[in-house]
Length: 399
Ligand code: SF4
Image (cartoon, rainbow, N blue to C red; front, side, top):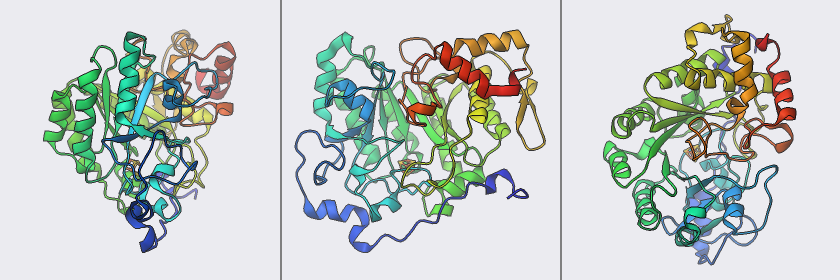
């Protein structure tokens, strides 16, 4: 492996053939069970649920909404209501690191799949909207986010979810972000979402280089996504939503270099976009579940580098990388760097902002990229003990 370029590491497994009787959600469509109330993955037989009438939501959001009891480790609640479109056919893409990918229809129904490490229960959209409307200004949620998937109905149904939500929930109460699916979208779709009141538009590029993108989300895994299409839709969103209202998801640890990650962060910052970093975690059942999670020292460097570029006015050009693209020096005065680290904010989840401050994300995704025993992205403000651990993980780059 030593002779291979960084991108050639972390290769996904090849997707297996799905037997015809399991394709396109056939078991769920044939059974045709009507949904009733809350559906918790693997608790009952999977009903035939379809957006826009039904959506899935993260376990953290379901607990926060009071749909079932539960506690979140060291968090009172989540601040982001993440809604995921749902269909018996599921997502038609095959991204190698994703628990929702199409190849999984061989072994599990779409609504039962784990995604960013957790279950996603399903419930009627109207029930969610009525609960939030009933909470009024007291709602714990700082933001709602609609996650699109690759499905022929995804664009139209996202517009309907937006309309229904906006009819009942004022913008100032809970602003809305879109986690888009560029593969199926036109500029007109982006414009309509903006006109319906979406505040922020995000694109999950995930892979930081074209080659890695193709290998993990495109031809390499028989998946329909294209790097150029993602950037075209992102450019459309930039001109429609404007500076500060667009974001891009990037996963650290899929075979790219530190320099690849931070060059992209700097490029996004220069055009008024935010980068939302995720630490690679081997999602159970995905085509990359055999690959180790990103080592913490590297992840901390990338969190801090991204924060310095976006929020501390520190240029990429001041940072130094070795020949393999590993960040070896932040190029910042040690006292100033120590203050940024001591704030703890760079090590929290990154994403669309909430109501706290611009550099603190509403999208706290509790334990979406790590177990609670070895936290990658903190869903809360790190305390003194956490900061000592973070400094140890950062190691020599701080000196
Ligand atoms: S398009 Fe999104 S939901 Fe579908 S497989 Fe890829 S990452 Fe997962």
